[in-house]
Length: 249
Image (tube, rainbow, N blue to C red):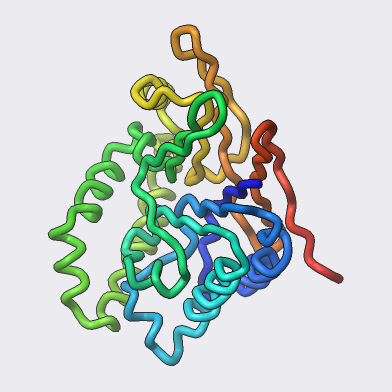
């Protein structure tokens, strides 16, 4: 069994999501052979050294829970999202996980699944794509990590505020689209030759089909998590199934 999740946006402001995720790791996740986290596990990530900060207990709790799940036999893979793109190898080491490139091809019987966070295909948002190219550059990452952690946290908070403000302005002007561009997505699927595409980012869980020449590709959009709901996508080698995570009363 393989599980796929994304867009938890964990932070100290959303304790209900953290509680649901920790419950999932201790229960449902243990039935999986592999767990793929496809971006935005955290709402922000200022650098792996936050794991050593006394006040950042949420990050340490999550890393420790992931480690316990990995020690129980679940192979955990983590992909960067647009919020937590500063996750590094030290975080992965502490979790007992591996960091995945975006995109990543997962071989299955009869073909392959291509995995991505999904934001790279939101090409209608030109301003965001320029921002993404900037912050994903190794030189930008090195420059950011050279600054004190407190400054990085303040910068991350400011960037989140700017992002929300820009989104509201684009919505007001009728210019905002969080969905994947159809032409860019078809070209992506043509390039990777997959039979299934799984991604998050858009917070619009659904299943789509794309006709790529003679090949029909299923596109599964993962659900974002909130204080009152969360789900994973399960694959048993044959079928996919969306599974809501129930908390004990």
